[in-house]
Length: 121
Image (cartoon, rainbow, N blue to C red):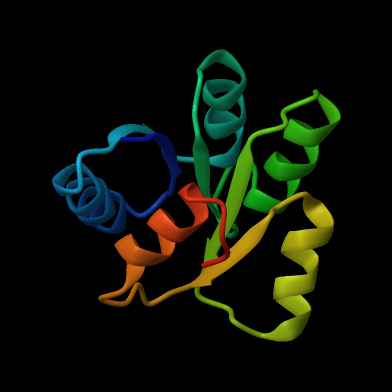
């Protein structure tokens, strides 16, 4: 299965998503803010980064921009509570490949698998 980095400041959401993804056989790394997420992504070998967009220390938009500036070529999916077109565009402009809105639905694992298989969520 995949090696996924989950960058999420909300501990309960992080625990829930980690548990759900591990149940599907994925290896999960975690970071609680964009700065740690960026550092962890650059130091690791991840198939996918799930990036919350609104976090303390460094938001996901800034982290995605910095990752791309540093040459990170891996897949980044924005995960945020705002599904407005403006926020979606902002995430893509920052360097995210796709966007998944919160609240996380029952089909979350399927969306992740479609991306890992080369499709869109």
